[in-house]
Image 1 (spheres, rainbow, N blue to C red):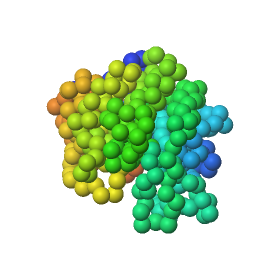
Image 2: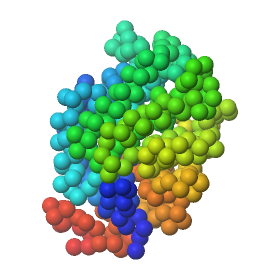
Image 3: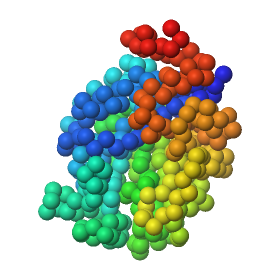
Length: 358
């Protein structure tokens, strides 16, 4: 029996298999509202029988969006269209998750197909915020990000908590906190971007304080049976940056505060990174955190076929496999992969005529 197609339980959530649709920005929302694109995009991956389908990063505040077209969950108005999506996903026998995020200094940008550059307030963007006034887009004509005050940090924490409550109301089965890829919580963690001299900066303990406070706040308002994930950049691939050694320590603290799985990605906090991209290059992070912290982990990055994914699980290097780009290419990755592994796929009855075994 393939481990990839075995069930997996975290708290009160049982996944039918260990294939997860990774959060992937679609840049297709208006005022943060989910629409038909999101329903079809996420719904088709549920029809494709992934065990868990995540939304893209959903901003907890309007200024936390990566682009003006990002998904949001900063108001109660966002609940209804998201509920439509979770209802459809559940009807396919699949679980749903939402990733909560604030982009910090990497906010207010164009979608990639428009160039991806930061948008000034005069052109319809907004003034970004960060732990310290250090810009990411040095070559662009942008304002230096505003350093957040203690009071503003408290507002952000409360916004994450309120967003989590809305996510529960919208019917999501799990929540992931986005603390990776150089977005706000990652910016606070990194010594390269956090130069503060108050309780949110300086020491390692202070730099992880915001993430821990967000985690505690969310854990306190979601159901006990709902698992909580955190995505981290386990290694920043930059001199003087946050390392896998620190990620192990962060994961230990997150575990004691109610986190159930660490989603192990890497990079994105600074431009001067040197990432040795190759097959399974991030899997060792998931393996080390899993074994040293005794917590469930997710492996992600350049995982493109079911045999590769199954091998990672067989070697006990991770517990779940997050699939990104391959899911964009093939929404039926899980269905077709089951057939490749000679496992009877769970084809929707409407698609039975397409079942290669029929």
